[in-house]
Length: 346
Image (cartoon, rainbow, N blue to C red):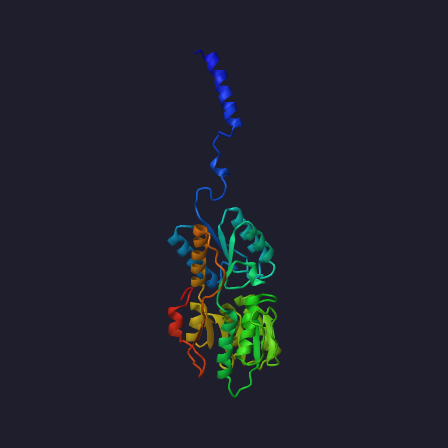
C-alpha cells in the first residue's frame, strides 16, 4: 500500500479515536482518589500549640499504620475560622473520604461542614463540639465541662476556710470549649450551675476579673497584668489552657505574688503543664489525651472508607486531675503520672 493511501487512513483513525474518547486522560486531570488511595484529613485550630502538635502526630502515626494518606491544615491562630474553611474545602476537593476537625468557631464552621457532608464526606469533631453537635457525624473529645469541674472541685477543697478572689483567663466569646471549661470550674467551686453544653459564661461575685486570651501565652500575661491592676487581691486564677497559665504566671511573678496566688488550668501537656505542677508554678491541671482523640478518629474514618459504616455520637476520651497537692474527696494523680502520660516537649 502506498504512502499516499496510508496517510489519509491514519488521519481518519485519529479522528475516530478523538471523537470516541479513545485518547488517554492525562494523569493531572484524573479525578481525586481515582487510584484507589484513601485520603483522610485533619484540621486543627493552630499548628503551634503542643496539644495540636501531638494530635497531628497521633493522626499521622495511625494513618501510616493503616496505609492511608493524611492531609493536614490549621488556622493561623485559635479563632481563625476562615483558615479552617479553606483547609476543609481543599480537602474535600482533593477527594478526602473523611475529615477530623477541632473547630475554632463552633458555629461559623457549620455551613462548610454541611456542604462537605452533603458530598458524602464524613466529618468528626475532635476536642471541641460544634454548635449544634449534630452538625458533625461524631465527636471524639474530653468532656470539657468535667475537666473544668475537676479543677474547680480541687480549688474549692484547697480554699476551704478562705475567701476566693478569682480571675478567669478565658478563650473568647461564643466558643463552646471555653464556656464548658469555665462553667465547669465555677460549678466545681460551688459558684454556679449551667447546662454543660452552654456557650455563655457563668458569672459570680467571686470572679473579679475575666479576660480573653485565645489560649495564647503572651495574651495570658497581658490579661493577668490587667487583672492584677484591676484587683491586686486576686488569690485564685483559672486559665483556659496551660500556655495562658504560663503567661499568667509570668505576670504574677513579676508582681511578686507567686506565693499568694494559686493557678489551676486544663490540658496536661508536658511543658509548661505537668512541669509547671512539678515546679510549683501551677497547683492543678486537668489532663486530656489528644493523641488518643486523633488515633481513634483516623481509625473511624478508615473504617468508613472501607466498609461504609459511619461513626456516630460522642466518645469520651477521658480526663485526669493532675496535682501534687491532693485534696480529700477529689480524685487525682500526681505529677509523676502526669509526666508519664503527657504530650509535647518535656
